[in-house]
Length: 198
Image 1 (cartoon, rainbow, N blue to C red):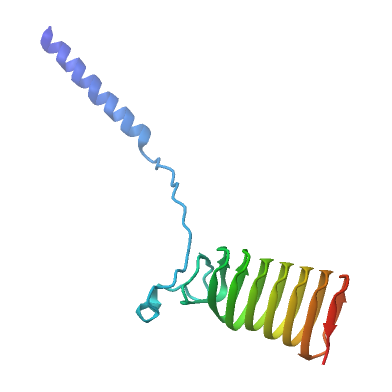
Image 2: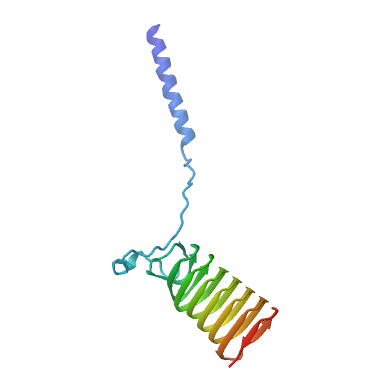
C-alpha cells in the first residue's frame, strides 16, 4: 500500500507540473522596458564614433545639460532640447533639425540650416545662421540670425536682429525687430513694439 501511495503522489506532481507548463505556454512576460534615444556629445570631440549617431531619417530627441563647449549635431527630424538654467550650448543643424530651449539665461550658438529654433524662457541669448522658423516666448530674450523665413515673438522686451526675414508675427509689448533686407509680411498685435526696416 505504501508503494501505491508513492506512485499516486509522483503521478500527481508530474500532472501538476504539466498543467502549469501548459498554462504558461504561449504567454510571454509583458515588456516594461522604456527606450529613450539620446545623443550625448563625447568628452573629447575627436573620439566621436560616427557609426553611433542616428541617420537623418531617424527621429531622436536629445535632452542635455551644459555641453561644456562640445558641439551637438541635429538633422532631419531630430530635436535637441536644452533644459538646464544658465548653460552654454553649441548646436549644428545639418539639413534640418529643431533646437528647443526651455530654460532661462541660456547662451546658444547655432550653425547650419535648422527647421525650427524655439526659445521658451527669459534672458536667453541665441546666435544662429539660418532657420525656417524662430519662435520666441518669454521676456528679455535676444536673437541674432541670418536668414529666417518666419519670426514669432510673444512676451515682453524681446529683441531680434536678422539679416533677412519673410514673415514677422509679434504679440506682447516692447519687442524690437531689426532686419537688413527683404519685404516681410508683418502681423504686429503687440503694444509698443518697434520694427526697424532697411
